[in-house]
Length: 357
Ligand SMILES: *Cc1c(COP(=O)(O)O)cnc(C)c1O
Image (cartoon, rainbow, N blue to C red; front, side, top):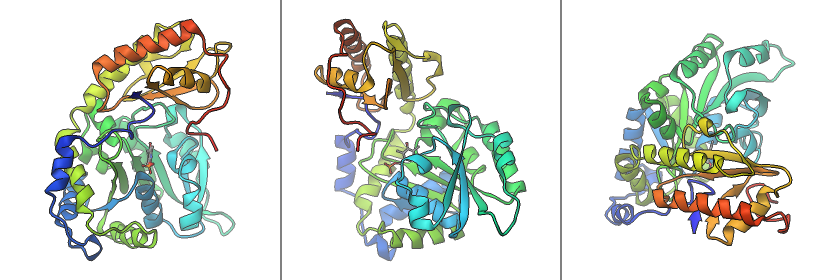
């Protein structure tokens, strides 16, 4: 099966499992896991921050960030397609008493013009606007990256207005590799950043939140409350250390594969895609009306051992990752082409996907 539904489907490699076998561990709740400490120190230093905290998931990393900055009655501003707003089960409200206000912008990105027009004056009537959340790369925005200048512009504006700035950096290393800025450059723009090891970096689980000592102390307390503080955590944290050594630079290969796939898909009659818009490892495309829906195409592809995620209606998302080879890309283009030739509009209209209930 060639699985392009997400970069989360990767399986730990033999070398990564070997690292797990020999990881030094201790009780991390007691602060005694040397591998976790090493990871936290290393990721904090990379992003030029005072401290870091290992988290179970990207969602947890984001929610620890929200909790570290906000108190009940506060509000955060985020793009309307932001993961924190759309894909985290209403967690800011449920876990931190924080309301979410969503704003528009091209490609999943927010800029100072929209943000400043929405800033609430300080007044007892209004929720207190406390936190701005950006996403880099943007997920529903198409795997697009913020330029360093863009991040710096929002950061300067946030500082002037006494607002905190959090980055959902689930795929920040994809942006770093695609754009050539450094982790420290990114770190200098944000108060806190959550980083996923379980996406393009190929770990079975885990994220980190980086920030100031105070913020990470608050996040550490929240992680305990949220039930995310583990014991011999080094057994999985070691996979993140391994990935930082071996799986960062190679993200360029995933991006090259994504461009190849986008160009291949663009050559298929019945698919609409702007292949020039593919910047990292996410490829979104539309099926022309009358040819069938995304769920129907996904079902046809599965019969030929290819999985691509239906995103509702005519929209599909393919994601390249470290378990996808150059040969796989050629195979996928061939299989999709054949599905369009054979037709798939007669298939059942229901199926499973990220949006199914
Ligand atoms: C995947 C992802 C997350 C984290 O999701 P988990 O399922 O908790 O790992 C956060 N933000 C973005 C943009 C993501 O793509």
